[in-house]
Length: 131
Image (cartoon, rainbow, N blue to C red):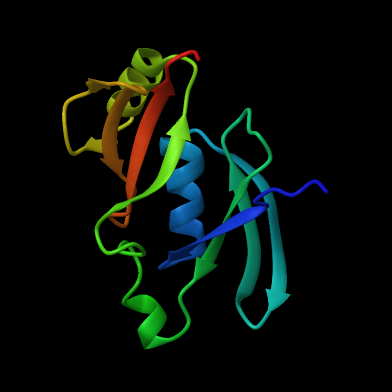
């Protein structure tokens, strides 16, 4: 049996501002943007060279969902952006205005730094050490 994570939903305030951040600032590709009617859209994004997992940008439609924008994991790192060149991507993201919460650090597993998306969700930029 073959399985994998297809999509991870990220609750957003508005589709267009989220698309602009993820594609313009983080450099992701817009994979799909399909209207589902009544203001709802199916929006998939992914890093330019991806293992197949996509982010589904899901606009909050209830007050309860709106409380989760930017805090889907209670302040913990939510997503992990793997890279083959940490310093290249770290500098590029900094130049595009990404807010890093810490200085890069070396860990047993690789080079890492935590950053925030436009809503405050925490991400790791991570270059794993070769096994």
